[in-house]
Image (tube, rainbow, N blue to C red):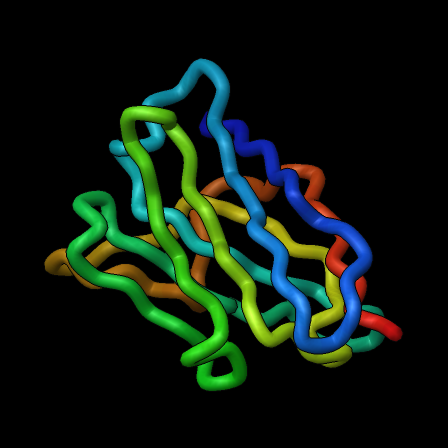
Length: 125
């Protein structure tokens, strides 16, 4: 079963940036469409973004469009989430997971298998 490891979270001021990484030691990440999810205390899990296996299509939640960018480097076996113009409401634990892909379009609101341990993002002054 695919095992994913998230990293890159931290404490940042509003308006700041962070880049999250999702790695898959021992697995070929290029075989999977990958999505990022987040879970804030007391809130439902939100599908943030996803990227197809070929990187040709991406998908974003309305809440992060224009601020977050998902990308992948299959040679490095890593998927990234660049987060700019961060807001306090972006505070959450962020997870990556494999997601379904239909006709080269990824589904950011569903996941396959299990999540990693997550990485905490805190946006606060």
